Length: 92
Ligand code: SF4
Image (tube, rainbow, N blue to C red):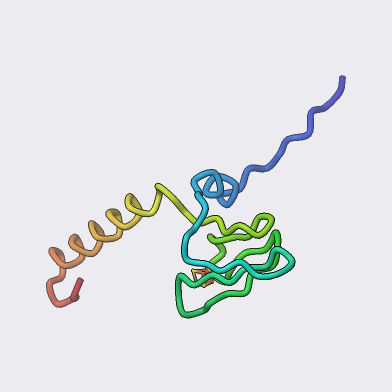
């Protein structure tokens, strides 16, 4: 009986499906690019990622997260407000 190799799906694989082409970057020679979205100003080579690990270069195009950050931000805000309610000395 033949065995079918299982592909391990990572969180990165899942998040990479929720990306679009970014706007804040400049194209450089040899499919390199420079991301301008934050102070790191990463120089990103083809098939590599920036320091944040969520922005990456595919053939000279920058792909950025799209569509999943707002729920994460809402969850963080909810946790902060709960912490403030339970312990008001902690500034949210
Ligand atoms: S790739 Fe990420 S860490 Fe680098 S400049 Fe862009 S947003 Fe900042």
